[in-house]
Image (tube, rainbow, N blue to C red; front, side, top):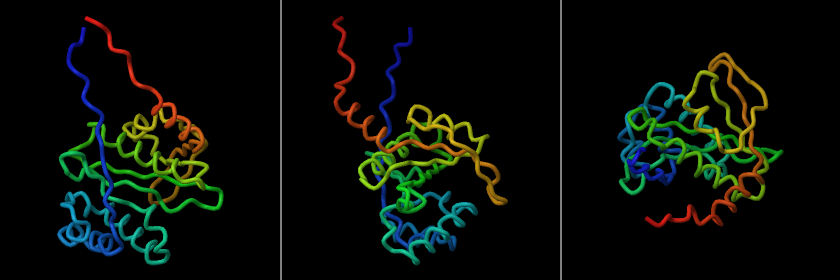
Length: 197
């Protein structure tokens, strides 16, 4: 019998990465990006792939500043205040009410429950928006960690997409109504009944 206590679920809060912060990171300026964000960002935020993504997101914000609430944010572990990754949406809901989630955990914090905490927070954000009908996730078929992370969140495989830069990705979708229903069920559940010794 395993008597070790289960670790408490991880909690994260999101810190906005402004266009100026994203541009600094895209330029490889970790200190400038951290100063703009108001938190100490991890060197992972200036890796080649992160720089490309942050440059792209900064461009999106320059074109449409109203997209800011949906764009990438730093994920900060609570209560310790350490930046453990970034997460957000690829943009506001499209004409069909679809948003796509994206999240990355800093390598030193992987396999500790942070991806699940980020995804939970993103789904709660999406479910709180009446105009969101569908949440989408695209995951490389060999990314077993991300495939395991979305399991149990109500996602269904709906197809595959690919491009030259990223290769093939499996596309998953979850109806926002099902996410909302899960939230209501979870908030109504008082948890397990204590067992008397």
